[in-house]
Length: 281
Image (cartoon, rainbow, N blue to C red; front, side, top):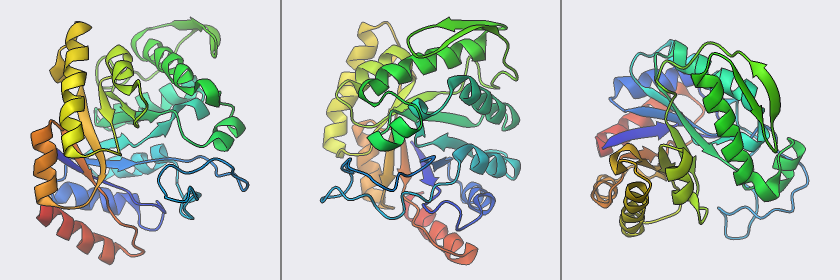
């Protein structure tokens, strides 16, 4: 099983190039970053991750993950780079396809495309997304991007996106495209992963629950004529606990992402990452 680590929020306190180099030198498999392009001042949506629904004060402090990874990829050779997650309804898929392909091309096939639909209605709507039907929008956006990644000329005529034949280069280094992991715990997420993605990136379950979900995912894949081994599960945001990592492995996880805590200096960050790597590798 692979072990990754995240760039903590605020994502600009420590240079992502330093974090990437350090993670690669320690033998970690992957580096992950999330996004919020903007954060509304007035929010009525409850945050799913806190007991009182309050939005954490760190939420406005996300740098753009593709810029972070451009810097990280330039100073590394092996470590994979993954979004956890990219808010697809808030982006134009023609531009996003270009960003993904460019990063994957220059990193020589090291990008993992973790995607999601978002939880914050106000943000999604400000950015032009259809919050009430955001997973339908995600599916269409992914279809658009796959066309752009795999065809010399692509066109699309759908509900959310409509354009005549266009060309988009470079193509991704990975063929046919980087792996697409669907984030979150939506009721139909496993069906969606089998239908148009390459894996699942959950964040709110236990190893025992994962064991059942892994079984469900494998059965859905078999019914759809897909090899269950082609669909991976990446567990998001875990403490650096070797026993817990082993429990995730036994439950069927392919990758676990250890939660890196925010610190303000490279010295502190490097020491923390050394402790975490020693605990889990």
